[in-house]
Amino acid sequence: MIFYVFIFIFGALIGSFLNVCIYRIPGGMSIVRPSSRCTSCGAAIKFYYNIPILSYMLLMGKCRACGAKFSVRYPLVEFLNAALYVFLLMRFGIDSPLVLLIYCVFVSSLIVIFFIDLDHQIIPDSITLPGIPLAVILGSTVLPDPFFRSELLGVKSSLAGFLAGGVSFYLVAVIGKALLKKDAMGGGDIKMMAMIGGLLGWKGVILTTFMGSLLGSVIGVSLILLKGREWGSRIPFGPYLTAGALISLFWGQDVLMWYLNAH
Image (tube, rainbow, N blue to C red; front, side):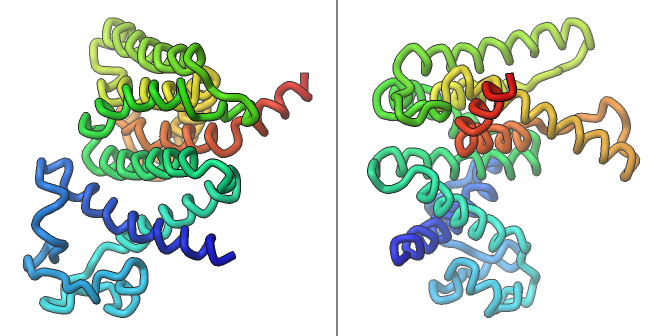
């Protein structure tokens, strides 16, 4: 129980750093310097006002210097990252600390991608380009197959996942642009799926794509019907792929067993 509390606190601390990444990466700013500051008045946030989740509540969501409201997203991201770290521990245990650490980094990267793509409709190369070779190396050597956790993913499945994710989405982009005369798939989505494929394998690419497309269709149609968005309006796909990747990571084995038993 104590270790779960530790993991939650650690995840919340990392979540605070993720907020910095989400805000600064799209603007090409350093994620290290300067220290955290109010985006309204520029006042530095003192360390004792920078405690994840708690500080937002103690300050009632406002800057101590100027009174400007802080976005509720800040504690949300901190809590989300902390909760996912705890869930990773519950699903994969502590028997392999390296695997747990890799998945924590992967999940945190997906959270950053989720919110940056949601805000700016971009998926930063600073995450996916180094993430692709790391994903293939780690997927080939130390990570389990999320659909058969007792087995290693291995070189073949990792490389097949990398190719399935990257090549299939590249073909969608090329064919879609030829048919629709506009971009059907962004380059960031292609690189993101190549990274996900390297870590989760080709089966992970299939489930991630299916779940991402399903969620994107349902939510997209709902936005059109409820909020009057136009058909054909650009909707960022990264958040839905993030959701699909998390489903593949946490429940890939369960989904596969359900599918095999149903057939």
